[in-house]
Length: 236
Image (tube, rainbow, N blue to C red; front, side, top):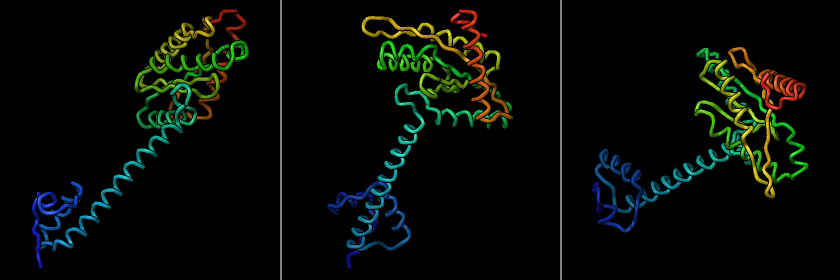
């Protein structure tokens, strides 16, 4: 019976069949612990290992596919920001960091003013353009440690981390100020927007439902006070 001992170049020099790099390493290890393999068994083992390598590649591709699906599940399709599900995941991490490291964060809830009027007057295409531009501004204006989301319709959320709460409020106020400069062209006309904002501090005792509720109430209070003073850009 012909016995083939391990040769690094064997698969190229002696046969027409091909085995993967990982399979070659496995065969090498097998040879180091035996006297050798018959050519027939070598071919059979190589085919099995190739099949296993192909299966492993398929699994790796499936993992990438699943990862992409998970990303899509947490991303707002229009703006590319996080959606509510993805943002609540970030809020959960912020609460965990507060418990573990004493690191407080700030949640800023943003609601565009009179967005329904814009939609009704100029159409949903103009509204989508405005939402897309708002998303672009928020995405470009936050740090890697922060998060921005489109929570629903014309409602957005910011998570500002690793900074003093008062400074975080100043940053959020600045971002709100930036939104005043956002404009989109619709049939030759420049359309602008403004926004109301409310805050909620995230600490070790926070719960997601309370964070959203507190910020939502603060945002509506801000909206009412600005309407009373007829100052479209007042921050209470």
